[in-house]
Image 1: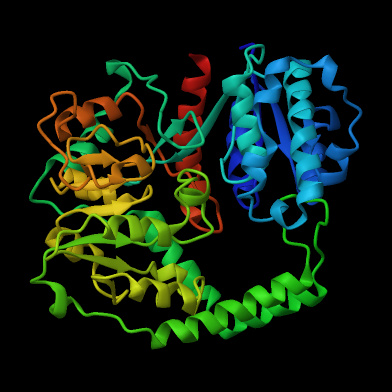
Image 2: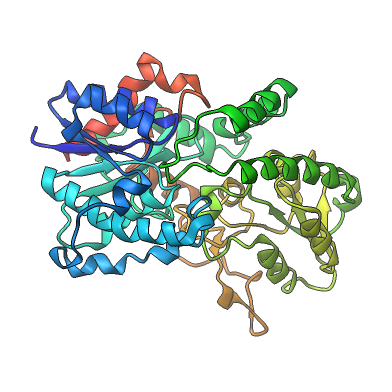
Length: 464
């Protein structure tokens, strides 16, 4: 098969992609890599060869000998500032970050063209990953297709290939004969059985375990030792290299967590009889809000706008993400308490219980909106999520928050909206079997059975 496939290395996910790449290589597919980390670069080029691994460290890209006039004009449509402003690392050195992202698009385009790359697979978290996706989508002369393999949240152990940084569109590459009985049954059980509770996605439970481990004293001491004496790749655009910022960030999390414990929170018993909407806070920074939900990443502003739509007897309950305690400072909660009829609910209260009691659920792009929509509860998303066509899912924008438009009174009788059954039929054209993760978060992802399952799905997509 005359296909040249490229993977973007990304921390622990690299080990997972390596297994997929080895499987594909045995199917006579040529494998290439793009790598921002020097340690990963050394081990990848030792296995795949120097010519097949593009290193995109900061200096390597900024000093690259490329001339703007040698490249297509539509590369200029990819604006570095749009990415730099939200990047959690590059924004601290804006001059260097701008130079890096400006030059990167030429380096990537040249690599794709020189090697006739047909497919590129990677995350869409860091700015260099988004740049790569945008080149594939917006530069007409680029013949590379970009895919973001990612969990579909519900049902368990399914994933899809997203096409854009907002995770709003999926490949619909499967015919009826490709859809397995197993995946049909899982969709029916999780989305069509009204008597069955939708299980908490695996990745959420696994994240809870990781956070619990990170809060242990041994882990904190180890992290502190690494801050002072651990080796840091100063050229990696995804790593914080400033010891001062790393130390102050750790101290800030500790102080914030202490302040959070003193913030007034309401109990389930005190609000269960009230008419209320629910806003589960996103952990931040995180791709689900900083990339997928960009332009709506100011959650205090989102909450203020929602509160402005409340009727005189309604409330908005805000629930902290259990993995984000310590991320937000006292000022955040102090400002929250200043908004009339906005209440912070105890983070230990079951979100599903709150959701089922609520008038509707607001989120930027969270799983709570998908679950609410499937249960016939109005959900309101600030991002054009892939499940936005569900009957009870509403995408809201800033234009909806004005005196003339009550975004809380959306109609659900629109015939163009999808019932749960119609949504499932659409999703089956995209859904793939397997776990997309990294060995640190979920060791099951590198089991022999899962690698065969996931890699087979990659191969089927590439064949088409």
